[in-house]
Length: 240
Ligand SMILES: [Zn+2]
Image (tube, rainbow, N blue to C red; front, side, top):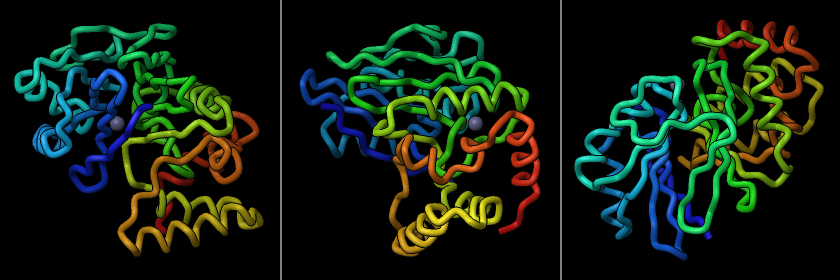
């Protein structure tokens, strides 16, 4: 079984520690800041053997070298981006392993051009970086709306019960935008009130699931890339 523990960092990042109880191996996803990752791994008694990066942004890769130096971990990340300390270059169709658990790499360009997601199909788990957020999606820094729309559709096409681990706590702001974009969607209204309650209690709203995103994420629910592009532009200037 994979045990997944969030390590909050900066103002709203989650760095994910992933532990396979069978083999005793541990990986960390997108360690932007090394200190809290190493402290939490030590507290849990987990030894980090691998770093997995979804894209090059410093809040996702800034801890690579320090973690590598402290633990001897290998660094795997997107082949077409500049990743500090990269050992294993990943692209569409490649696999990563933690003990017996196998993750498949899918290319999800849009937020950055080389962005990848890591999909553990048998475990119903995916690490999606800054591509899909709960009720939202990443900004288009490098890719086109067409690319991002396709990337979101690939993630939303995973099995319903797949748990999606994204890299930021943006859910409340996204939920407010979703209720503006889809005022008649009862599932969005319900989720907004849940998220308001969770955040006022200081609770983490991640992971989300594919089923929840299909019901409440207006970007996933867009009928084509043009509608997606219009929503993304509206969200960029939306003040909740
Ligand atoms: Zn990013």
